[in-house]
Length: 142
Length: 484
Image (tube, rainbow over all chains, first blue to last red; front, side):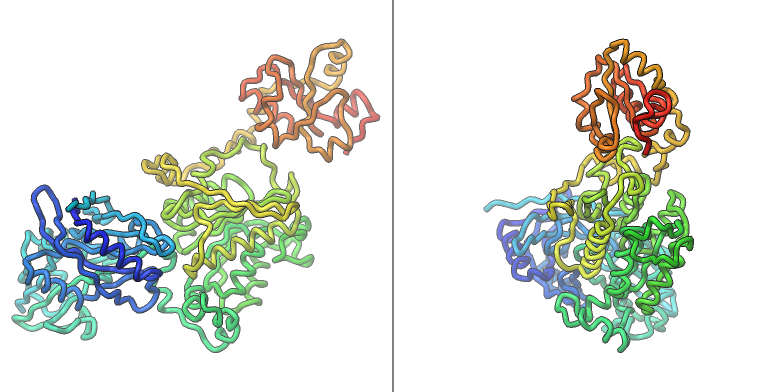
């Protein structure tokens, strides 16, 4: 289960709204707790480095990844996963998402409908890469 | 050479939680192969089905991305450290392969040809390049397929496939604008290819002169980004739908009847499929084809160009596609209406627990085998015109059901009959009394046999078909009734 604070959820929504009609992306840093609970401590917006077609694609380059890993290490956190938006598309992983997905990571997808942030769902790649399974999400109260 | 390979945290579950792996190798490629040889579970995440390194796998030698050195051929020396760094990519649905778009480019002649597209901000060079990279399959090269193929060719869709096995017939020319009077008798695809190629030599036209079947559909479809359904029968329509769902491809649908048309985009990844809308075909014979029911020639022109427009929108990734929406067009009223379609969670092919996981026998599914063997027709009791006349004269209570079209009713009819055209029977079945004896008739006895069988299946026990219909009535009973 992915556990986010209400503030994390709000900042993801705001990022998705600000980048519309382009896709936004970012990383989820946190800790792994027992019982497969992924406790997000920090949401890190990342500039979408995709050169064209940013309405449909996002890219976090290897250089950005290395920086991210370094940053996580300094804070004694782990890169738990990533979030990205689907402008005018449902919060379901696309075939392109599947081809490019890594195991382990939580992929949080937020749908943005006509500029308005809509539903948000989290996914994890199945072991055989055949698809994704939903990862339950919890928005922690204060 | 002893090489150290650093494994990213996301993949460490496959290396026994080791963050680094020692291997012997002389190139980057060898080092990676040695890693997956030791940890076979890792292979599917680093390499795709074709054995190529997945696009998100980047390998760094020190600070250098080996992609900018000699890639997998980059030499490594003793003590080197290689770092596998994932890049994270994703995005919403696009029907085109990104790589194909990057490969396509336009020459000066094409730039001039497509200039009216290129100055449109929503198309521009980027969109025109996508069109060139796109592969679209048109199933059927008839009324819908003609305008569709013409406009896709003119627009510069790079590869267009056509599936049809017919020859051009004189009755086609009233609506199938790909063909001319000189083409009568020639195979449609031969003519279509000539005509389309002459219109735009930059486009590749591939022809499949065959009937689309469960055996060949997946193979033909697999090479295309978008499938456009321009067929005229239910068996092929369900075949196209199921094959598209199984392959995850969008199906741009259109159909026509007389003065009315429908269009939608069935794309199971994003919305409903044809089976969500129509889980089962209508009983055979209930919905007449163009040959039986007639069609105004302009109508397929309108619906076929709507399909062409939707196809181009999908390629460009612009606008709002007809996914989840059924567009209804009435030419007489000159009215467009729209129905919202929902994905059916119980859909047998695209639902949560699909029962159709491979292509089935669509002719059987649509009941066409039964029609050919006429088995269903044989069990329907018939009455000869002479016998019917005798019983009517004797005052027997018989409900005479005329299932022809109103234009035929105006030509002639039997005294005391009630007209319910065959395609309205399912909706008007409640007007019939199952307790009464019903004799169904049409012109020749063929359509009425289908309706009699349909009614019998619906629970009407006392149904008979008038043998030979109006034609035999005219011969046996009353020669003043005109034959037509």
